[in-house]
Image (cartoon, rainbow, N blue to C red; front, side, top):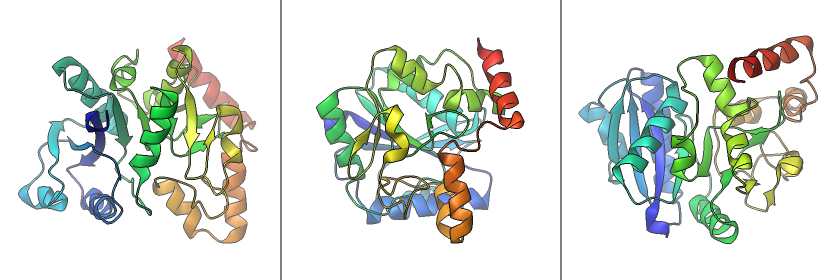
Amino acid sequence: MESHRIILYVHPVFSEDYNNVARRFADTYKRFPAGASHKLWVICNGGVLSPQQKAIYAGTNPVFMSRDNTGWDVGAFLDACTAIVESGVKCDMVMCCGSNTHFKRAGWLRRLSDVWDKNGPGMYGVTASYEIRPHFNTSSFVCPPKLVADYPFSVTCMEDRYHFEWGSRSLMRQAESAGMPVLLVTWDGEYPVSQFRKARNGYRNGDQSGCLAYFRHSDTYDAAPQDQRFHLAEYADGLRSNTPEIHALRMKIDSLYG
């Protein structure tokens, strides 16, 4: 089954900043091997990668898929998973990775594959937050490609992207409604939604060493002084999600999607 697993990485083609984070992704992808058989797809948002950009992935033998930048990383996940399903590519599990994804320890896909093989097809996140409402950070997660391809809403604006991640009918809610297991996976354990923030050294918790993958908000926490880390953790714990501004945003997003 492992050979039917695909990692999707999103590389916007139009900025040196994105080239730099792509270099970090590719470097850590090679330095800290996934530990499980898979194929890497690089989704080129905004056009075709130049030869210099493609060289970032030397030695990884990826599939390159070009598209426009509609929906940013989430739009890339939707288009790639739709292509996988409609073309009949053999794939039981995709790992969706946003542009800022990077790794610090080998075996991250092996860990996710073990949980998948134990619990069955589901949605498994590597970082999670209670900010606004409980959700996976959609910077890195695994699920069946059909779950993403069947997402019932288009993603063309920032409100759409918010809803995909934490809205009342988010991708995670779609997985729950389908009866799939929904778990946060760290190096040390698996946690249901009610226990997301109990993960030891998880996202914005302790030294974050329990995380299987990292992204820009992980980096912000790592770089912050201790007092600021405390406040960032409060946001992730949902302790600052009942302000009038957050309530208004939550109501606005939910009202748009039924």
